[in-house]
Image (cartoon, rainbow, N blue to C red; front, top):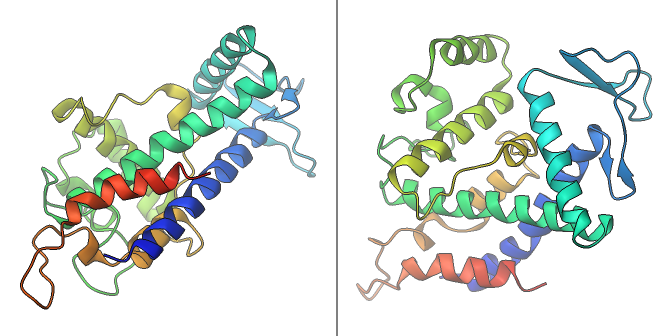
Length: 246
């Protein structure tokens, strides 16, 4: 087990997730300086936020409700401390939530523990970047509604694969919550809103998780040159420990 690679990834992943979540929140007017109101041209179905560019950032539908929930939670946390503390807490909470899920799913897919037996973060085919459940989303047992199935087809047709990946990843986590509630807690509205994962970004957390740490470090059936199993089940504990180093 390469503990140096595990440590480097865990510490880097924490900072990367927090930075990505902070950026995502900032697009919707939520920064370390405070919470901005939507621009005047906003409507009940679409909100616009000034991000310093010619075109404002917009959110629609469910994202509007999720943002409201995020603001509500921030205000509740702020009441018990102050805004900077509440803001930092939310960033770290969301980052840790998605880190937990990424690590658990990586361990499960390598060891073929996922109910569908379809990989979520990687592929059975060496060298294939696209996760298998993005390639065959309707075979992953995610209980997609008719509207969600239509959205899957639309995203694939428009080649918006990272958006499709995030949608399916959330569905997978919620499905695993039904089966393993003690391991996969229910995700909240704002947690889903702030998810920024990408499998195409080679500087992203998913790519580094699947490429920086040897798959054999997750595989409990893997044996070393002496025919011994090095104890890969411990990798989750090491990742959590290193994640919290800072």
